[in-house]
Image (cartoon, rainbow, N blue to C red; front, side, top):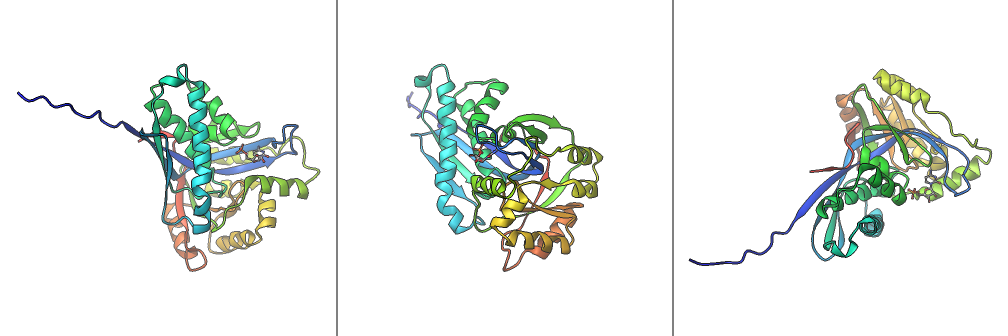
Length: 313
Ligand code: C5P
């Protein structure tokens, strides 16, 4: 008889989290805490980052998708690493026995454009919370996880829940919305990111008389339940679009170009600079993407929504 000691198997878990598009983004004048009150409708779309947690020494690494542009990549490790490390620290600090937690490596497989207005960093944070909660066996209650998510960023709670949802407060107070259909989008990232605070600052300069109560999302909520792409196209609304276009005038040209090429409607996603085009169907979206893609626009993606929030693969 021979006895051999097996090395302990390395545990690992991978969690996938989606990008978001704001179908309606009503923005009011800043609150006392500096954040802007929002009336928004989020939709999670099928562009994902994966976060793999495995036994290790606590390092965070990023594997970028081939299409992410070089100057954006330079900041990638920093930006993603930051919010993911903060997620780990926050969840650990919330655990009953912080010293009992094992050391875990986090590897982000990045496909959502960085600083793009698609909440890619928020997706990473949400995925990290779920992955670490599982690998540490914490079983954190949903409400508690949503609270932690809101402390990491305004869009992180939505990345946890996914689907379509109405958001208020600074975007963190969510109500799930029913969806009548699958919606199809062409997503055009920009070769250079835009910082969210700078877009909000430009919004404040351009609209010093913005109302305290942001524009209502009722029209988009109604259009979503109609299931009609042309109704949704007519209702799409983004109060940050003018500020994003003021900082990046070429975004206005891109929206016009996509609409000439047959999109039902183009708009800036969130604070930009990603531009999204609503299409009638998957075939329409793929055909539009083919027409738009070229030397000027090397990366044109197709995504549908709504899709699930952060989930274990
Ligand atoms: O919440 P999050 O960290 O994602 O926000 C990033 C920045 O975007 C904030 O520091 C703030 O400048 C701006 N912001 C805002 N109002 C919101 C959400 C974000 O002014 N509702």
